[in-house]
Image (cartoon, rainbow, N blue to C red):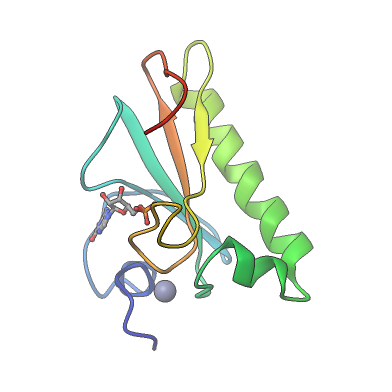
Length: 114
Ligand code: 5GP
Ligand code: ZN
């Protein structure tokens, strides 16, 4: 297994509050929430980033699964909308090198993001 915190969570090696799980996708509560609802939707399989996924032949399926789950969770938890964020790479603000979509909901979002 890659030495990766989200791989370990997906494999139940370290604990997390899991809100959704299928064969290919897992969604957890963020440890440091930035909104009343702050979830992380990720593939069970390790991809370093969104860019690594889109370079993979299976990208279409995985992207569809991820965004479907993320949108459903946003719809469920947001009363008037929600925000999906995919930080990619160092300058994009990515701190965990396992692809994940942030689902933020439960408050009004401002723009631009920091
Ligand atoms: P990034 O900065 O890569 O876009 O997002 C990483 C997110 O993962 C951050 O919001 C951070 O709070 C969250 N995070 C980091 N480590 C853990 C962990 O061990 N458990 C959970 N549930 N969230 C984590
Ligand atoms: Zn991983």
